[in-house]
Image (cartoon, rainbow, N blue to C red; front, side):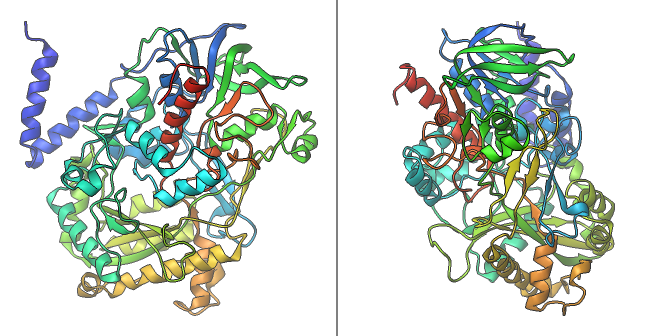
Length: 612
């Protein structure tokens, strides 16, 4: 007998074959949304009992933690407990186009990160909302879904500090996690060998609707005029160039690690997932420096101890992994002493924090009724990125290394009349002040706008994460440290000035495009457009692409070794973005997933059950 699912799947295939129709595309999106709204499919919540034992305890189910727990549980005689402070991802996480709705909700840790005095004065309190996912999948469930991996030189430099992290090794694990659905890449042998269709993480580049297709073509040509060549993809053999980006979603669903690793293993008998459970301390024998478990606060407020016979694996992320280490007596002696915490191991935990600072620049495009139409078709884009976006990498003369790009560019086209949403996002998501947000949104009342963000990929400046107190429920202190090295400010300013020349390209000249003067109070004394003005502008409007890394650096002078074991401690590893010694030329979700895959094999290898 033919099942209802079979009939539904065949109907879905027929619709997909006809999706050029607006109505059919809307129906497809409605179906995708209805699937996402249904709560079934996530693993059940395991409620651990005080004193329970497992072979491995993994703390945090994010971009790396969900992968480690899933891969370790492939060994049938190992028991694995995955502990997650949040719950299941909501529909707004699953539906690809709704990513911007999750900041400052129960699914976000809602941390604030702070800029130094004289930096970021357009941010109230010089604070930036450091959005971090608090749900299955962690930040892979609430990021902006851009899929970039970095360039070979990023990983060759890692390998100098931590042998075993060279490009060829890392590429193996990128391909292991990747299910590339963009068939255009496999038609070019130079790109094809860099990709895989066999991994769990679905990666796509959805077809544009008619309006997005036209806009993307115009913008890609504009960047070509500027000297940034068009390439097939941002993860290909070319170090620099611009294209439409790839995303971690497909078939109407976000491909977070919750979706791609945990859902398919639902019901695996040796994998236990404790939701709404918050680890407050790592249990560590101070004399033998051996880890034996974790202290956990449950949803009802009860605190229990859980024990690990083999290892505790800390995958709580760049902010919370160092916080937990320090609360447990592993960290800089001066920080721990300040908060009356006994130092078990003195390590540079929380130091070396790097992030991709960006500076936005606004261009006005065409006016009139036709500039509004892209906003009217947003309902047909529920399964995709909602607005036209171009992304790429470029360098300027005098680069420190020609094998790595200096900058990443994100360029988004927003149709006229979306100014209310722009003001909301400007304030609620990126925490700019009302004056700046108003000036950013006002030009969009009657004209399309092009909002370009220029990222400094390889900063010299370093921030840090430290403890606010010895109370595990208190947020840590996050210092972004932007522009502590003057060269970073100079470099990012030069990048922004270069992109400002977009206003002189054919399309923007044709539509009488401009660069509106945004409201940046500290810069009023400077002549608009002068070098001093742009330097002041970048210093005060800098924001974060939410790519913090490096606070548990791997290497001899860091926190973990090349196999991610915490120095001088037995039975404890860190597996997440915090172990990166240097920030790569990439959005960090894909590199963090790669770390999860690589670490899983290292652990299996150390216990004699795997050899690649």
